[in-house]
Length: 384
Ligand SMILES: *Cc1c(COP(=O)(O)O)cnc(C)c1O
Image (tube, rainbow, N blue to C red; front, side, top):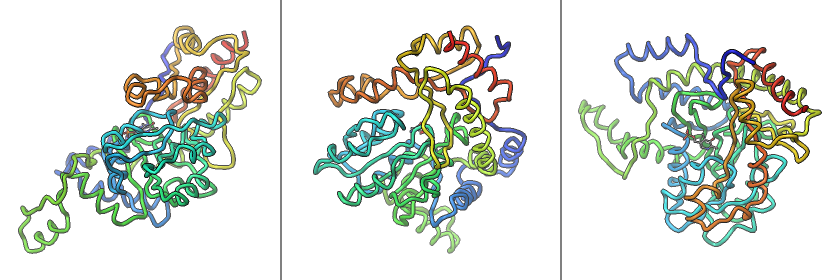
């Protein structure tokens, strides 16, 4: 057994990030300022299309502001899947809208596009697809359904940096907005943080206004040129969810490494795919699109000698390796179950796949030996 515990996830930060944060601390300006602006510019540059990026303190707040800015309000319905993290659907609740779940496609764990239209009602205003694990949803289909029914599309791209769909990076498609997460365990991190990406200039202005108290920059700029640096006007019921320059300075370093991070995770994924192909498991789906490999989700088949919970416990106790589960479908959580009056069987694919899903460690800080240890443990358990 490994001497040292292998955690399920670990951020990849080093001397560059420490230097950048130190420089920011020494600069005398640690909250939203120059570093954030630069981070936004570099992020748009990375995506390489005509997009605008608005830094935010989390993907959760990014999705909420994007939906609100696109006009989603009380009484509206938003279509998403139950196979995601709760934030995807909770942002709708805070806007007074109702999340409507559509089951997943068992092959990809993404929303089953063939079931979306049946869930559309006169109240439906938006679709919120989630690129689970970093594999893109069928965006052509989603965008064409949205355009046919005049719905907004906001992509939950918390897992999808960088992911491509038909050779285009997620973030550059024709959705109304795409939101990325820089939470500690994501493919790049700022500790906490997120980015709203959109081609819609009005949404850019709205998000900038709402992320910082509803303070109007235009007025601010107008008065500062006259020298009155203290003047501002509150023009909207804004939130407080700006990103700090400290976080942005980390983000700028991470962004430079993002391509390499993806390459490294892909290498680990390829080793896993090769090593597990004779085991009684379903391997994660991947195709010609670039997969961010944020998660590597194995699913135990019926002929597996062990069930999921015991598998994870064994990995932990006998092999000193941390695993996780993505996701506990939302309709199993008491809040969602009671609010929307849902039963386990309502989304059978989400439920069945959750019961057999295991997320293995996959991150750039893993050494070759760490990867070998995971492979050994998984094979050892499943070959019995
Ligand atoms: C992590 C995550 C979020 C939330 O991101 P935050 O930046 O922590 O708000 C949303 N959706 C999915 C699918 C996630 O995994």
